[in-house]
Image (cartoon, rainbow, N blue to C red; front, side, top):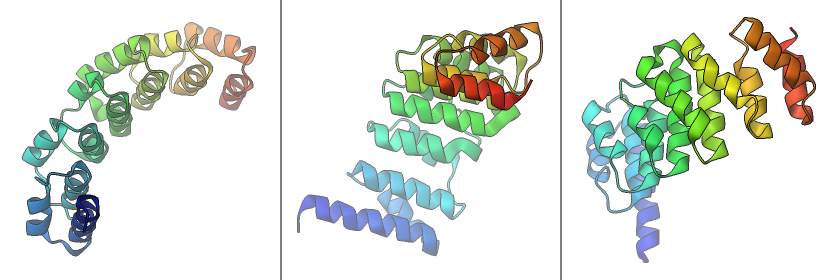
Length: 198
């Protein structure tokens, strides 16, 4: 049996542990040599309601981005500090952390809003900027509005997301941004502005 086949089998064991509430098996696999197994083991612990801050701390520092990304996704409803992951060198990890913070809504906290605003306006990866803008819109805090407004001049996908993120906000600068969006060269941006119906 090949090493990759062994890893597939252990990953299956980790997934099954989550469905059968086999905490010892999940914990054993949490330190597996294969990152896919480690990620699945963490998800299993979350599924059975047996994860703890230490489990997340280890996964968020994991050397493999797949584990950090899974940890960020699983931490959307956990009391875990995801702000450091917004600066992760792997864009998919930063994007997932932004999504997870957006899922927390108003509970994300001021530090998250500042870091998301920075991500939305400076990150080289458009998907990260888009995810950050979406999160700021979901959080709906006025401190995030300048970054959302700045994103209305970004690439088309980011502009569309920024227009949608303006939904919880009001004011002349918001109205002006929506007015511009109605005349945007990208039809999806125009459609997003029309959907807001202001």
